[in-house]
Length: 278
Image (tube, rainbow, N blue to C red; front, side, top):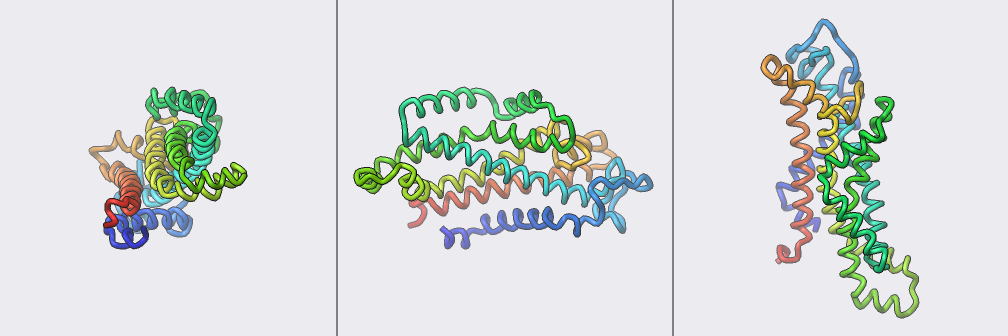
């Protein structure tokens, strides 16, 4: 897999974009030059100038600083939500696929019901129910809402992989000699489904980042003063003619990050496809 990824320019470019944004988010306090909530009333809607690399927004806040801290918000939410939903989806998918019976029937009915609604509408409903009381609480609300919305896809994937693997000879042999179910799952099932899980997780991070930006664009996601690319895009719309850069920078950053994760997931999937190895 690694050899094919090394030869893929799309994988290299996607990884470069992700690593660059992750580095910018990690070292934002040293790279930004300004706090994300610092306001300069003397420089409102200013263009690029000394001290403000990309200019300022309608409140006099530095665009470069808010882009870097916005990357921190998007990546942290994408990764943390992916970890939560993967834990939920993998656990339930393994139970349904390995145990079968009512576990399987119950999980399938729940996922069918959740797939009947668009993910973003379900997330909006959950955020409306939870109603964060503060800007910091909006982070927790977004974490919970997006994790609860996105786990069914991972659960279905893991269930399907488990159903296919549990009939393999090595699993049947382990079961015949009395190996505990937990050990079979950890030593035989999970390692053999790690590749499709990795591909799905990479693409899911892109979906979570886009969903968070959508919620913030609608005003129900990450709340000020914390920067979010979705909120920056919404705030820039009234100034589209007078200051188009306000819309361009966060939109370009969001598109680049989402496309990078999607292309990287496609590259990983292609590297694992046995039909392409020949």
